[in-house]
Length: 97
Image 1 (tube, rainbow, N blue to C red):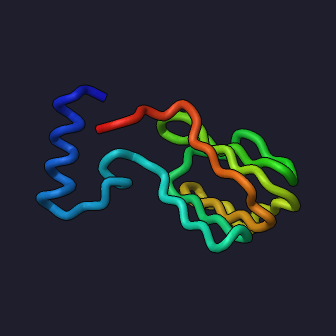
Image 2 (cartoon, helix red, strand yellow):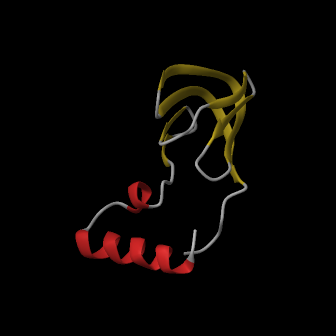
């Protein structure tokens, strides 16, 4: 993403009061304790085991690690997972804006 494009999106976000996750195509994570995780704005499940969930993002991947993980719902842009979540990592994303 070009520098000008980032500045324009940031300006639009601030001026129009739009959420940055929508403008920048970022995932929105909602973690409830260490038992439930909701991920919005993903691009699909790359890998899933009871110990790990890997989701494709617009830029990179999201890796969720834990024990006894279960996908409770999956929609085109939202995934819900339950279990004992121990770690969440974003891989291959650009830093800064």
